Image 1 (spheres, helix red, strand yellow):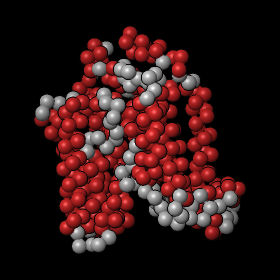
Image 2 (spheres, one colour; image 1 turned 90 degrees about the horizontal axis):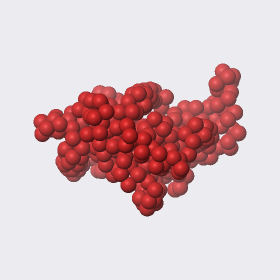
Image 3 (spheres, one colour; image 1 turned 90 degrees about the vertical axis):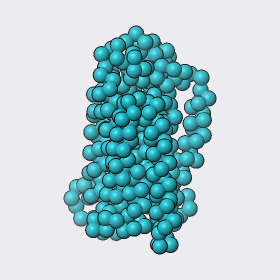
Length: 355
């Protein structure tokens, strides 16, 4: 563990206290949830939102109009934005460790492109029409899982889940899946198909319902618990497989477990919200910059930062060009690109054990 301890000591002088940061981020998340619920096509005063939630939770009679807007429409959407942002940040941190690449994001393994094939088949060909309102999410999830299985099988047949094989296989298959989705749009007889597919690909949490929340919440919580339990192994893997093996970490089994866990997590998130870029790339680096490279510290911070960030992104997407909504990836790209460039310019930042 000497190398890990050396990495830890190098960032001690620049690190924020994790408990203090969490104490600040949790109330910030709660305040952001309230503010986000107040904004939409028609903004509501903040005290109206607070009163509507307080009365509803107390079981007292509620104004039907405010109850429908706050409880049935905006609150599920805001919670979904937090959960998806938290999940993408968690997945990004895990995948960056799995492939030991600071440029990795949750969609590197081809999951998003596979989901786009499933979603495009639903939107252009009416596949899974019997599933009703769940057709789009189910199609995207099945496409994502199929892509994960294909990437896993090809990488294993070529010699195992090494970082290089995962990156190359995921990148190549992503291009193939994207081409297939584009072909389906091109061949579609539905004139609005291209617009519908594009909007889904760029991400949105509009139309969220309470019934949709249980699956992403379960996936994110389960992934967080498992990654935190394996945080020591992840620290060793981030330094290098040789170091991890020398410390007794079962590298092969850990890589397989990480791949399966993160593929399912990203598949679920893409299925409920489409493809949302930059969150899983930038937020994990920001968390490491604030609290250091140790996963036990960085993962909780990344989860809260990702959730708060995407809630604010959703607010911007709703109010920037009212009453039209901007896809979330448009906003995350405009914010995430300069933030990532700033992070790259900091000489003090290290990924894993490398500067």
